[in-house]
Length: 118
Image (cartoon, rainbow, N blue to C red; front, top):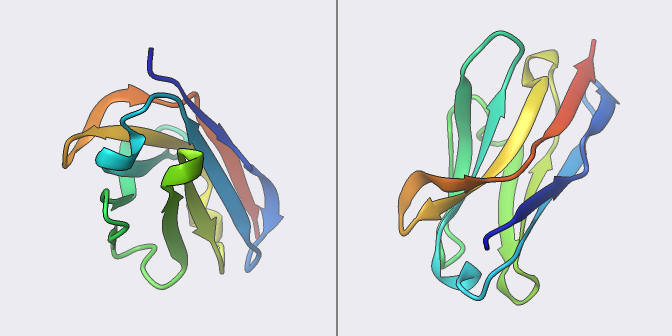
C-alpha cells in the first residue's frame, strides 16, 4: 500500500517562505520521480514541479527561481521549499508519485493548505 503524507502548509505573508514535506511509504521511492501539484480555489490542479530519481528538478515558469524541490531517498521524503511567496501561490498543495517518469501517477497525498496573505 502506497501512502503519501504532506505536511508543512500554513498561513504566511507575501514574501515569506514555507517548506512542504511529503513522506512516502514503500521500498520503491528511490526509483521513481515525484511531483508537486497545487490547486487554487475554483481552479484545476496544476503542476508545480517534479524531481526525478536522480534528483534533477523541473519547475513550471511561474515558480522558477522561487521554489526548490529536493528529495532524500534514505528518508523516502520529498520537499518543496517555497520562497518569495505571492498571494497567487495560495492553494492546496499535493505531492504525487509519478509512474516511472510520467507524472501524475496514481498515488496522491491528502494535500496541505498554503495561504499567502498580501
